[in-house]
Image (cartoon, rainbow, N blue to C red; front, side):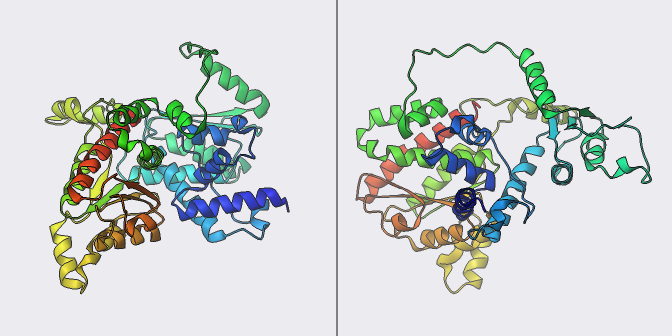
Length: 431
């Protein structure tokens, strides 16, 4: 039953689901990190993962050879594919003015697209005017003409769910008949011919190798910011790898429409609030406001001021910052240190990230929140001191400030999270 394919894919999906990854992202990570994939540069999945482009996989259970393998875990497969549907729907929320192409999928692709369109519109997103195209070998006559259920073409889902129904509010759909070996290369060449010329890469330059080199190539702005921090504070150099891992986890969370949840006590609560404040507004680089938002704003009183001033931000929530919920937890729970965990359980979902800040690493409410986050298949990050306490054994990624005394730990934390926020703002808003 294709042992290698079934084993590798199923184990990758299970590991990814346990860490809150969708199915496509889990497989992209497998190809990227497993040294046996020596031709990974020819893989669309690898390239999408490397560039941070969502690659979603929508499973029909029982249809693939990997489902007949002894290692198949249908709970993990279903959850991971469900997570990919959320990612797909998030992308469709921004389809206004864009293009959606369906290549050869006659059932699953059209159905998923139609449901994602419904979700996007029901959530209040403006998704009205866009272009769709269906590529298939099946010829259709006048595919924009209404037909009755006595015509077999009526039951061809791409005609209704790709070409006609989604664009009924003002867009336009097309059906292209032909072999993919002809139509896809032709489409590619047509698109590329309209693009601005790309300057060739200097072939004499050798790309950096290893984890740090890959990080520099894929995240040049963030890499420069981190390098500046480490030059100024050499004592933080041992944290280089963990800083990269935290940045990568947060970048992927925000790119996939996720939320960062933060928690801390005392001075660490102030740090959590500071991080959330920095991420909630882009101070450094303006990302253009979507044209659909500008069109809506300019038509309302005061809208021009909003269109001029609003800036994109990165979504974050500080746990314990809701007095009403804190009061309810104190009244209803005999153990008030479960407040962070309760708030997280009520609000968060798989794919989000939790960042717990504790100078000792032993703050009970932060530790319970970490366990709750892991239950929800969230990525967990700990920001702590030199010893790390219990937090260092429970979080997925831990950054240890090089100090033991509380005041010094908090000082290092300040430098670390300022750097991470700046890295995220610079890299995400430049893409």
